[in-house]
Image 1 (cartoon, helix red, strand yellow):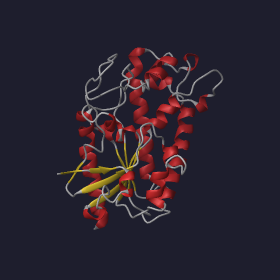
Image 2 (cartoon, one colour):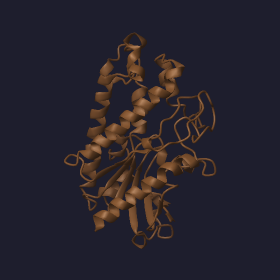
Image 3 (cartoon, helix red, strand yellow):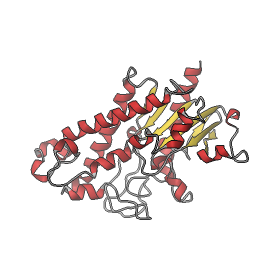
Image 4 (cartoon, rainbow, N blue to C red):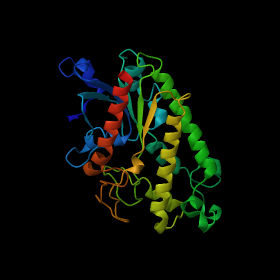
Length: 295
């Protein structure tokens, strides 16, 4: 099996560093969040999904991903000029596929919305006085109106990504999305002042500690359904493919732990073992789509 060869966009500007894209069986443009980049901060300890991908054919990716990136910023010319340029700008080319890691940071940003007077339609969690009956389980803490707002936001920005793809020579190329694994809200930052990400939100809304994991599972499950529904809407999002990583078991982190635990290097990022569990089957699914569409 061939590991995915990964290059930064800047490598294309230097003849001594630029990969021979034509020499690979599959050529990808990658864009996304820290699930595509976090290992670059500490390769010996961390990992990301791209690092762990393996293919039957040789494959290369130009990786435009940035930790903390959201789908809205990925689709914005000023916020993500490298991705826009390589997909539909001066350096555009026909890519065999577009790999995307998106939705996680959008979800985290939305969970951070709180404060007196913020309507339910603009936040994902309910204040204690708004909680539903205990029989609803973790759903009692979530704002359905806020989730609908989030879905509308996400779909509109995915529209922009598809339109951007179809502006250039990669028109109609497959776009591949992945889901996430279910994290445990816990005091496990990434260092350098980054994180934790989920713990502050559940604490701010007074959600009981015993329900932290169930709330995270419901949120990640709803995000997976949103991505799956988008991929199923071929008229609106043509050639969009979703790989549901929530169906793949990973070792959970221990509640309250503050460092590496289970398959997790910190609160929301998997370690190398966890990434490999998701990346290997996703790569197999990606290659099957590309081979099938080539005929």
